[in-house]
Length: 166
Image (cartoon, rainbow, N blue to C red; front, side):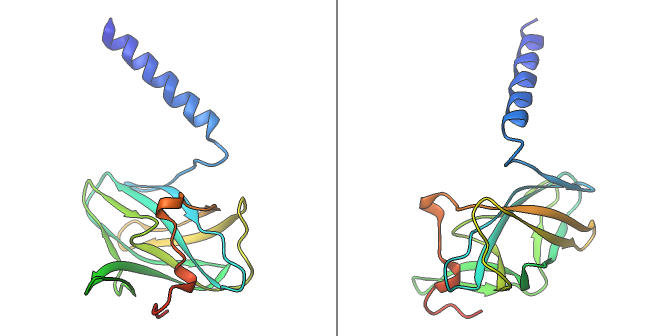
């Protein structure tokens, strides 16, 4: 009886969150992959680069995020952040990033991310952009990313970071 009540409460909570967050919380499915937290940082005045983020949950065998593209930018690169000599450095990842079997790949502010280079127009808060993500095994999926500012503690200005080569 307690188990049934707990299930009912969980179902009600999930339904409420889904209905309440429908405008900002969507996800995309591609085979065993579930993509969520699909966001792109608004662009800064005079800066034609920005960063994109997502979480990929994998219910199946290992895969790789091998590329991304967006009509809003000349190119989209997969970037890794790493500390070298006490300094955070950003570099393009050749060959993509692994999505572990039964695991997760998290591209998030302050860490690994998608780098949108050569924006064709400014990206404004509250809008959406359409991006295509290609995985080695699962194939490609085209989905929208919400343009919104990351939480202040995690926000980074990828477009205007001194010493960053793009």
